[in-house]
Image (cartoon, one colour):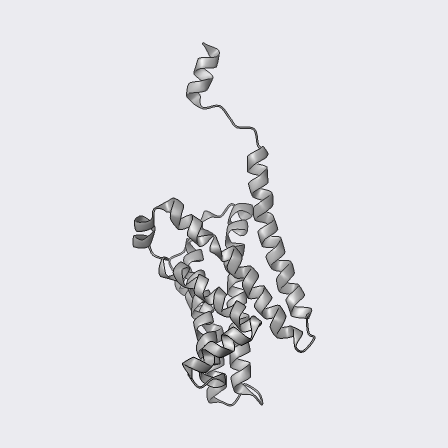
Length: 210
């Protein structure tokens, strides 16, 4: 992998945020900047979750193991955008009124689902470093990080309910199709490995030939 690959991907991941900041300072976020900022950061959270889920299929299909090195950074950017999304909602919609935020979360299902996805994503971000992997053990760490599948579903449901108010489902179907393909590939890959005939170990082959 080229030494400049990771810095380049890092910069590219920051481009949406930089564009939003630029738009905020130049009045380029439309008639309702707060709503635009909240929805854009939510959209980018879901996009990054899809990108994270796409890393493993692309790595296997393209036989490019170096792609795995980007997965952790991409996951942290998904968390970065969901934090900005939550802060934007808490600030612009609720004025950082914690009791009102708590009531709003409990009252509106689509916000509850989104907040649940944020809560589940937090331990994944908190354990995205080598020391955490060693502390948890590789197997437990991998089990924990499978929560990303649940998070993807919750993120999609949050997006669906948000768009249901305006009866606009075009983008919802696109994200649903992408997530279905990415999760479907994992199921197919898992089943294929289970059905594949197991090759005998060298020791077993020696015993059979004896």
